[in-house]
Length: 174
Image (cartoon, rainbow, N blue to C red; front, side, top):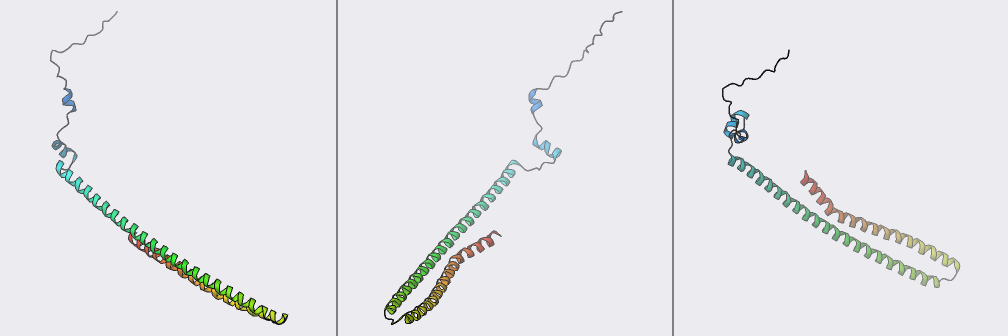
């Protein structure tokens, strides 16, 4: 036997009306959220004031850092200029000493040639040549030592401003 499907019986009570979309989207007021989520009771203006103060503090610190960096760059440029001037002075001194040595050596060679034309024999020439060679080796050693000292002084004089600036920069960074 076939049974008929059961029909659902609707009650006579009216159904509750569906909530409108505005009611669904609307959120509780912030004052209602504060006790629920523990949010601070700060007003919007207080929050804006705090953010503004933080931004101004950051801007002030950034400006200060930029000014310090600018001063450091200027001091470094001055140190490099001083270093280059010292190096230039050192090179001028070395060139002057080299020219002085060259002049002394040329004069010594001319004196040797004049003396060589005045010797009486081969033995005198050998003795004159030995004396000249010994004197020239001693003179060249002295000239090389003087030029080496000038080069060392020029190097130290040109590095001193840079060393001082690097020490100052490292001290500033720490």
